[in-house]
Length: 224
Ligand SMILES: NC(=O)c1ccc[n+]([C@@H]2O[C@H](COP(=O)([O-])OP(=O)(O)OC[C@H]3O[C@@H](n4cnc5c(N)ncnc54)[C@H](OP(=O)(O)O)[C@@H]3O)[C@@H](O)[C@H]2O)c1
Picture 1 (tube, rainbow, N blue to C red):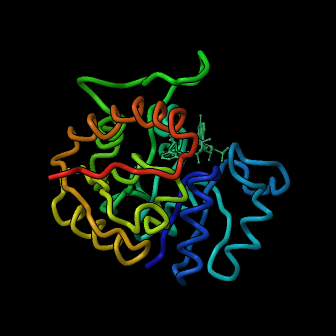
Picture 2: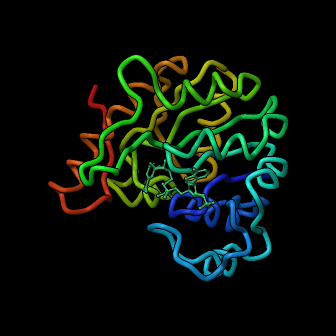
């Protein structure tokens, strides 16, 4: 399967490198695919990513990444996601699974961030409304980039990840890809895309846990 990743930060780079390592053909999208040498947020310069991704990964614009992907991943900043997806182009998302891992975090007033969208709406829903022909599946946004691609590094993988979305088959496919690509053992289907509200509103506690535990290498385990 070809995968297009929108986002050149630590999340896009980490997901992209892991998929390329597994032989998935990846195009990593950014507005500036020719700028290789500057650090990308908490991620490395893209020259490092190109070297790491090897023959299965290349850089492109958001539109090139989305056109390449049979499945597309949104790993852009929550406040820029709709703009990034617009640049990617609705026709390049039509009928495709769009894995949305973004969080609507507002750092404009410093840390801890607040949510730009919450309670009666979510970024996942706004994306689904703006791109009705894409099959949006909100997932992986509740854990750190390194845990996303290697859940076994925390408690031997005995913890949970969520999926939210309107298309049951798309959610099943994503759950099976999360297992196949990264080794996720427990995927909880929260319901339709409105359930992304809860998955996004867990972020304020996630951020505080990072501070309290002194490491981002943790995840939620739903005791039953
Ligand atoms: N860091 C984590 O471990 C983690 C964990 C879970 C979820 N998340 C979520 O995953 C997403 C990615 O996080 P990140 O830290 O890798 O990167 P980030 O710094 O949040 O986002 C970087 C990406 O957003 C794009 N972007 C920003 N503003 C834009 C705009 N106005 N229009 C178009 N594109 C725009 C950038 O485009 P260019 O490439 O063109 O600069 C870049 O590709 C975020 O939503 C974050 O909340 C992060």
